[in-house]
Image (cartoon, rainbow, N blue to C red; front, side):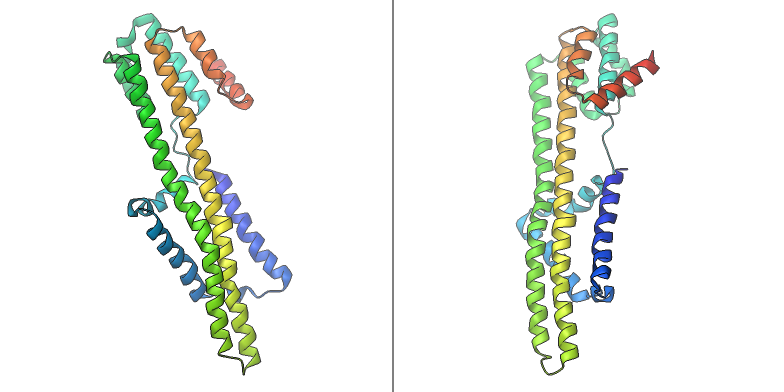
Length: 262
């Protein structure tokens, strides 16, 4: 579970609601079905037009990714795994890795090792795995773009909702009380549009972008490790090469894991 998404959402809601109370606004004005219809349904409609239907169908999945970390391994885990695999390969040969395939849950790593065990040339292994990383990144960009588009459309639809609300308000010019209430309700659409765009959609896009980059970096580590094992490079060299990709905190975690393993 990625708690930062939950905390961020809670802070965003608290900021708006508490801010409204401090300013003396009545929270009851937020109960505005018309505003929700214009912003939420309107934004979904605009994104459906702008993006392929297959991408829009995956929106719930993309949102879920912001709250759940689906990677099987972290970078320290990956270094540990490759140190183990390199030692096995060095002592028993590449074919010995086949008996350890069931222990691997990462399909990308499993695919790379399968290619190596089957005797594929290094350039073929590199091309296949590199292409998979590239195509994965392209798929990720589609989801990122969807939320970027939503973040652009929602605030604009908020202005549209405000205009529609003001048109309705002008019909009550003779009743000052009704006029004030109608104008207040009109700007709820603007509030909702800005909140949806800049507190929900754009931050979701940014988080998906960061998750995508993390997964790309992890898969690039796997690709490098697979090629090193195939070339018979020493486990110590593989370890040091991979450690260059780790942050200071990740290196500390790796040393702790390695100490427990020994």
